Image (cartoon, rainbow over all chains, first blue to last red):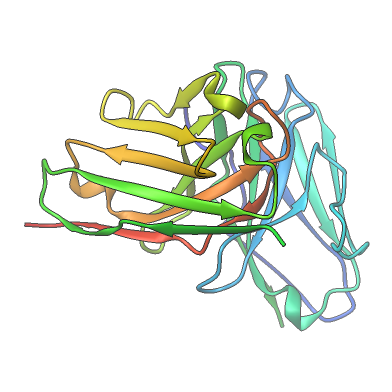
Length: 110
Length: 121
């Protein structure tokens, strides 16, 4: 099964909002509300930022939000801050009882 | 405080074997699915394998099926991954991750620091 499709990079200025898309198929994103988003800082382990499409774990800033329409999920970050610069990965449960990740998106805050 | 600590990585020859361990603390280990995720140098995350709570069911990526075996010892609160018939493309940092429930899902709320597996002759 191929990876979920994410843009390789996105950028924004401090204070702006950005959206990262994650496109799958009817076998994963389109079939389940089990989409997650992870933030990975350089040299660090990933951190769960959004679970089950749009739920924010305790401690995650309200500037991060998630949504889904059809086979595409999205991560929105509002009020960009320099500390948000990182790699972001989406993931989804699939109908073959596996988990699939996106290729990752590098967010640059310019 | 939830903690996950991987060990057992290192340099392995192609075709060789290694076992990774992930010692956990701070939560009721038997109640949660556990997962291994790997990341090759400069690449993205790849789900490798998961095991449901109390070792009820195991799941594998096609790329490792038949070569890797996931297991858990609830009495020791430890997760394992046995890697056999290693290939160059298996070289990666292997992360242990905790699921948010008993069964497999895509939400992993705690991660270890990672164990490096290098495959080279």
